[in-house]
Amino acid sequence: MKYKIVKDKEYLRKKTTPVSSIEEGQEIANKLIEALDELSNGIGLSAIQIGIPKAVSVIRVKKDSVPIILMNPVIVDSSKEKMMFTEGCLSIPGKLSNTIRSMKVTVSTLNHANPMPFGPDTEPVTQESVRSDYGLLECVCVQHEIDHTNGVLMIDEGVRYVQKVEKTIKHGRNDKVVVEKNGETQYIKYKKALDLVKEGWKII
Image 1 (cartoon, rainbow, N blue to C red):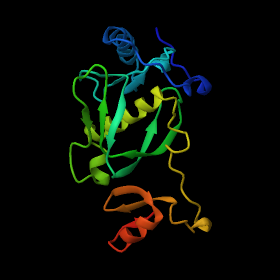
Image 2: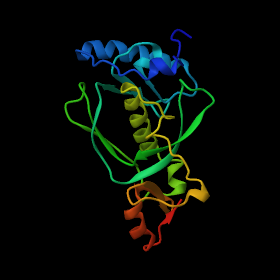
Image 3: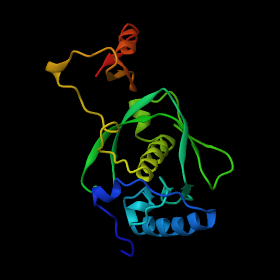
Image 4: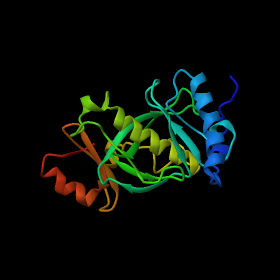
């Protein structure tokens, strides 16, 4: 393989530098697309993962689709609705992580004139639709890759979901918990979760 995927977590946790022009970003993006073409299981890649500490990512959830290029991406809006998603990472092979992600995000970039919305193709989101919803997968991938530009990994605290042990079931009012109803999940404060429990939601 022409481009070696970086697996050094200390290096990956460094915040990247913005590109100074679309031309610079495109040159890096071309390398990322070339690297993705060589991989059989990659749907997203960031420049730092091939040793270039610049804020550029590419996303392609369908092998035959045109890659989405994100230069200096920033999430400018995200939905209150959260979901738990099982993610993998080319830089952490063989490891899966349950993460908490926004169901919808809007991203501002250097190379797109208008902010880009990402979210599910089908609503409401159910356990069944999650498996085949490319819009949702793309939305999660975008958040994963933008994390890479900020030196954040899917295994880091604040991203991964840690199941509470049964014996430590007591929650403070401001502790974050996951609630579920009909396949939809939210990651909210315990005091708000108590109100949703009355409406049929379950704390998991």
